[in-house]
Length: 193
Image 1 (cartoon, rainbow, N blue to C red):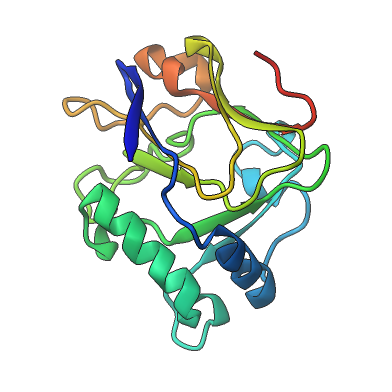
Image 2: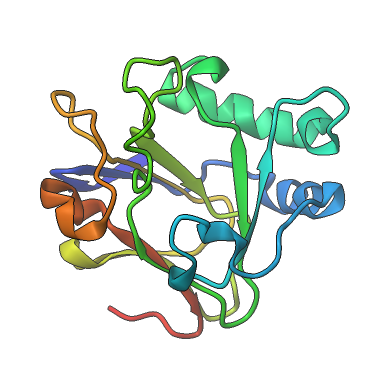
């Protein structure tokens, strides 16, 4: 059941997006492929110490062929109402105790991507919490003074670009309007509100 956390820009929270969060997290760990700490932020390595893995559409890839992860992708595509070829592959970010992903914008570093190609620049993010710590952990939008607490199965959807401006900025200082969707992932036990 979606709820509108913010209207301009729209930030939608889906509290019960999936009941299979634990199975999805276990599948992502089982297929492996997570990079070293800091691999989540190749564009600006100083902003994070979390690790990530992309589920690339390659035949024979354990991640790509895992039925639990494919089901998650299907569910996500239904929410955004887009075909898979117009979206990036699934990307998993793993946070260990005290790991975080500092302030960033998901469209950063994509200015070289032609806006009218099938994938184009990243326009929306659908972020799904697959687990939650006993205390702490959140997705925070500092400019909006909003936080979404981590809860397994919860999803958050928000835009990065305007319909009439599909050119993403390369750095936080030149984001202008888009500064409001700068977000960060707060480590376990240190939620800042």
